[in-house]
Length: 231
Image (cartoon, rainbow, N blue to C red; front, top):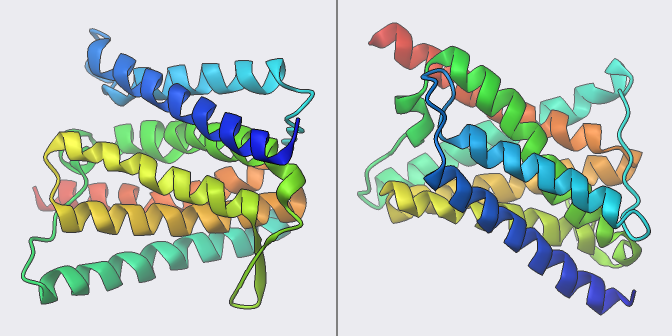
């Protein structure tokens, strides 16, 4: 498969999986209160991603393994720092422009336990296996090309998977979210995607991307706990 074909097929397939999973999640609901609407979305996303990785294993060199704890400290730290810095910066920009600082819809609809299980853990795994596990790995032959950010080489696969991941969160427009909130989420998730992709590529291990994602989502768990205490 040629490199331009990898880009086209990789992006198209990722979009199709994302759209199918999102559409199914909006239409299919489990009659169990503990399971949020996103459970179906992420379950289908996870299943389809695994099927793709296995079915296209000739083109997708997927690797995942439990990393050494010491090697996870920097990814976790940078995931947390990106979350704090981007969200504080975007909040300041939003207030400066006279906009309303909105909270993620999940924080108002789910309990802290639900956010821990279905956002911190489940969403992190499902989304990373699609965007970094499948998309970034199918683009792996392009990693020789890229750009330097803060003296770190960010390859084309890392860039494409991060931008795709960020833009995918525009789906939150269906929740009635405002423009500045969507901008904040896209900037944040794209930044988190860059860090996740960088560490996955560095160690050739999808587990690092999942760990960075979890670090980013940990602020959501903290936010839910604080909102619950103030309720």
